[in-house]
Image (cartoon, rainbow, N blue to C red):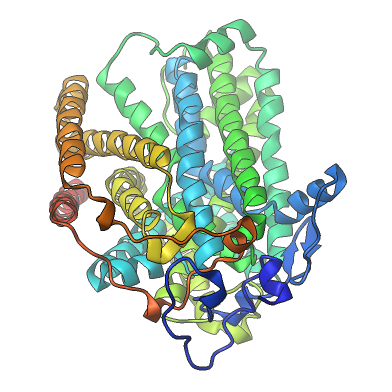
Length: 564
């Protein structure tokens, strides 16, 4: 084992040549030619706040050494989480505060473990495999699911980018700037941030925008909240005014805007592009946990500010859009309105960069294009070209007079709710695939927790889709009925697994030392054994496919009707 392997680097990277012969699973000394697809994903870790050499095998024992390493690693987790507090997220949290006070803060607290569990699995996939999420789905589950994941990701992400430009236009309107000026300028800025040819410059720019987002915290302070009430609402579930259909839908919207499918694709690819390997996985986990806390505190600050600014005004409970919130806050105090508009603009920029880049990364993975921010525009024309094209087209949609921007915003929420459970299912399956993760597969307790999260997401997805298609449904009754059905199905599935389980059904992983585990990388994709589809898995995937197809068709029909 060479020095770079022990250092946790990408095992020398993908250097071409003949593929290695298949090796027995679990023997890292036999795992040659890892699956890294772009040679630019091999090398030094070059973060905005530090650098780690590829051959650095330092045993980091002092606090100073560990802190410097953490600073060098910080980036992907923080960006993906703060990017999720995008323009749509800012509007949703402000709506919760304006209409329901701080009574929904407990939802944000519950989302912290959901975010950490989902993104920790993504971190493991990225560091161990060196291959993006879309490519793994394509290789392990077939072209149908690969095309489905990338195609739907493109549609959802494109519509999401449109909503980010809507946020730019609303923020510009607050400051009296025409959106015909603000949107093109924002598009140029988005391309400039990403296409610099330097991963470090990209990450530096993103962390600068994240620093600007910290103005959410003084917003909460300026609204002079009742902190005892805030603390109570964080830990005691409730809903101001009692349970209602509108309240339940808003809870679903909060979950949908905080836990989004594009996050899985972005962080896995960004971890790979930053060249983070298993040796530094705990630092990236810390980065992810930090990001989840930052995003939840920011969302809470928006709820708090909106609640205490509007609670004694006629606008309490009368949410219209983000611009209405900014103007309402300005009436309560000019600084609040200005800070909110700046936060909205900042969130739109960060969200647009992350969502667009997630899509370009996925295209690069699936179509074998060079797809690294370490490369120049000339060296990765298709990668940066796809990014630029999405930005330009999304900005152009917002500038079209009479464009159905409200319908687009609604469609984004519905599509996100539709795709999130399926994305989480693929994530769970990949993290239990020994050919992909070897000794890094999920533990039993993590599978149980992830399965519970997926069950909840399926219920929320079903409620959101049903109410989008049939607005007259009783949301509360539907939620209870779907929850009951999910409990029954979950119990039946658990019983089936216990009956069918066998010690011989699992691929053995040979015992290994911690050093060997930290050096284990997934080999080339062509060397992996095919996925074994059990009858239960086939039934589940077929059911998921039917749900997605039927829901997508009904959603398109609904959108066409609304457009007319």
